[in-house]
Length: 123
Image (cartoon, rainbow, N blue to C red; front, side, top):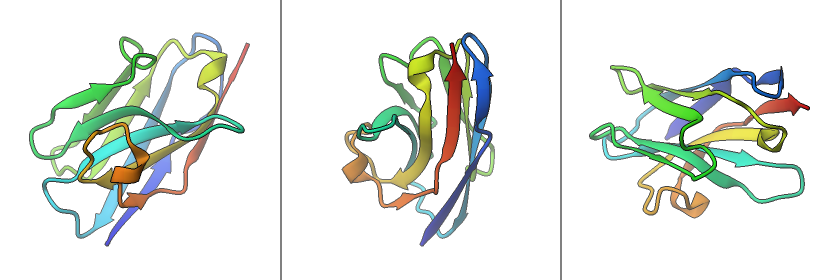
């Protein structure tokens, strides 16, 4: 079983940056991907970015492309989401998830979830 813990959320002004971290513990297959999801108030979770633990390939939503960067440490246990040029619509809970995700943006394809970290972007 995989346990995931997120950190790094907070309050930031429009145009600011945050770096979220997701640390995985427990038994995690090499073929599992790690994804980041955003849940705005009153809305469903949406895929933001994903990284393959197998080959490091990355995937981004259209909204995240060119603003966010996902990366992973050498041990493949910690995944970061660098978020730059933040906008008020980026406000919400950010969850990391692990699983054999195909497609990467579908929350249904992930088996383990963290508790979420709050990001608030003020205008």
